[in-house]
Image 1: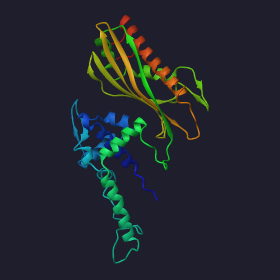
Image 2: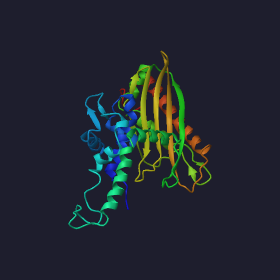
Image 3: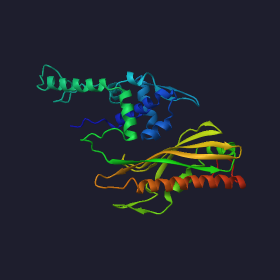
Image 4: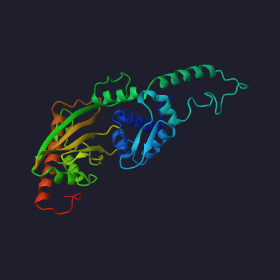
Length: 319
């Protein structure tokens, strides 16, 4: 018997967890942020968040500072509320042994047992809050949540990302390049992910292009000032499976002095590992990550300084 959520239910629940995790910050989430962070297709994300708004779980605001946020505390929103927003009223009215609703003129011998089982399921869903799911999601992301013994999931290797490079330019000059929609950064990230030499490991080969031959780059909205600017970025492989390598990081511009800045890249990479494969995470994957991150920062720093020497296209164009 299949007790899994529909695809729509899956996306609605992921989006609700995303809003729950952002609740304390007070900042609404943009459509593109929910899509990138929770792997919800961009073509559906507005409909999915619309389900939460229609159910009174979320509210939306317009404008440059607008977006979506929970309408009440995550602890006051139950899993049952979210599932019902996507799947409709629970339990369904259809009889377990028939195609229509239960009618006592045709007594169903399963009715009472099924009603009791359904009530137990609803009690569990109603007793689980979005706050609980958001905290569990944080622990899973950090690798501190125990994997259930009956889990049917791939193992994940999570590698921290941390590197920096200095650029001999003023903070406003660098910020002018980084701000306009990410169009300038994207080709440098794509090139860095593809370059480098493959490294053999215990089984198979780990390459700097560990994301595969194709992927999508999502750059979030920049925040902060020219002297302290943050650009969120996500790079994820394209494929039918949910088990896809993914880079989640922030590129931060920090002014060192009037004519010099530091670019800091911090975040994490995660890689799906088949159960039978043992990749020496302590050696191979961190090496690959360091090589790739260093290549990206080196490319960006070089392109910025070259653009300053020979301005070429205006800020926001490709170097």
